[in-house]
Image (cartoon, rainbow, N blue to C red):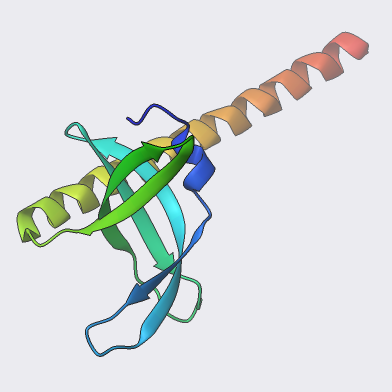
Length: 116
C-alpha cells in the first residue's frame, strides 16, 4: 500500500470521461490492495446506475500532496479476479459485522444479568 492513509481518498468524487465524450460522476467506494498493487472501486453518484468500476491507482507524493492517477484496466482476467477479490472482502466484512452484532447482543445480555 502507499505510504499514506488510502482511506483519505475514499469517498472522493471522480469524473470519468466515457468513450462517447460524456462525463460520469463517480465516488470512490473502496480502496484495496491486491497482488501487490492498489486499486479503487468506483460507483456512479447517480444511484439509478448500479455499476461498479475497477481502476488501478498510481500515487506520487509531490510536495506533501499526493498526486493520484486512475489507471484503466484492459485485461478481462484481471478485472474478473478483482471482482472476485472485492466480493470476498465484502463477504468477510459482512461476516465481521454479523459477529460484532452477536457479540453486542451477548454483551447486552450479560450486562443485563449482572445488573439484576
